[in-house]
Length: 440
Image (tube, rainbow, N blue to C red; front, side):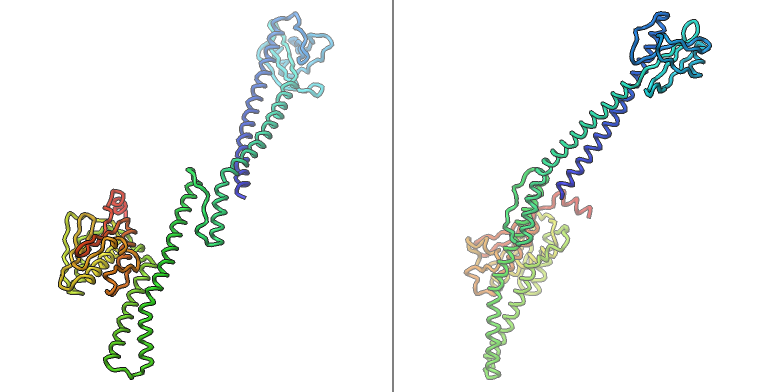
C-alpha cells in the first residue's frame, strides 16, 4: 500500500533525525556534566587548601584527607573513610608539584579523586561521588527517550493523515482510470484538478481522454460516412456484374460496352475512395519529419506534375514568400488535392492560378464557385455542395487538406464568388523552430 510505504519512510526519516539529535545532545550533556564535576572537584580542593588548618563544612558527596610528605594519610574529619593512596598521590605529596586525578570505587560507589600539592609540603586529596551525574545522565536518557517515542508516534499519526489527504486525489484518479480501463467508457469524469502536481497530472489525463474521445467520435463518424459512401459504387458494381451474369453474352455490343465501362469507372472510383479513407484513418502524414519548406518551390513541383497529367495551364506566383516548418510530402499532398479540386470544377480552357503570399497558399479556379454557406462545410468529410453533386469525386480531398494543415497548426479557408479561392495558412518559422532545426 502506497500510503503505508510513504508513512514508513517518513517515520524512518524522523527516527533517524531524532536519534542523531539525541546522540549529539547526550554527548554534549555528558561532556558538560563531566566538565562541571571536574570544576567542582578542583574548586573543593582549592577551598580545602585555602582554609587549612581549619576544616570546611562537611559535604555528603565528598571526602577530604591530608597527605604528609612521606605519603601518610590523615583524614581531615575524624571517623571518615580513608582514601586509598596511590603512587601518583605520593609523588605529588613528596615533590610538592603536579596533580593526580583518577577514578575509583569506594563501597561500590564511583568517585573521582584529585590530589593537589600543599604549600609547605605534603598534599590534599579530595574525592567526590559521581552518583548524581550518573542520575542526571540516566534521567536525561529516559526523558529524551520518552519524548522521542511521543514524537515518533505523533509523526506517524500526522504523516498517516497528511499522506492520506495528499493521496486522496491519486486514489480518485486511479479509481476513474480503472473504471475507464474495465468499461472502455471514455465519458467517465475525472476528479477536479488543482494547481499542484497531482492536479496537473489529472489535467493531462483529462486532456488525453478528450483527445481519445474526439478520435473515437471521428472514427465512428468516418466508419458511418465511409459505409454510406462505399455503398454507392459497390451497388453499381454489383448491379453491373449481376446484369452481365444474367445476360451471359446475350447483351448487345453497345450495352455490354456500357456495362463494362461502368464497372471500370466505379472500380476506379472505389479504389480512389478506399485509398483516401486509408489515409484519413491512419494519419500517414504524421510519420514524416518536419523540415524547412519553400512554398513556391513546392507549388511549382506540384503544378508541373499536373501540367503534364492534365495539359491544363497552371501558373504559380509569389509575393514575399516565407519558409515554413512542415512535412514536405504531406504538404505536397495538400497542394495536389487543391489543384485536383480546381481542375475538376473549372472548364478545360481556363487556367488554374496558385499564389503564395508570406505563408499563405491559395489556389484559384474559374469554375462555378462556392456558395457563402459552404465555405466551411467543404472541408468536412464526404461533403458535396449542391452544384457539384454530378461531378465525380469522393468528397474527401479537401477534408484531407484540412487534417494535414491542422496537424501543422495552420488554418484552411475558402472564399465565395465567381470561381473558387481555396487555400491554407501556416505559421512562420519562429526562433524556437529554427533552433530545433539547427540542432537537428
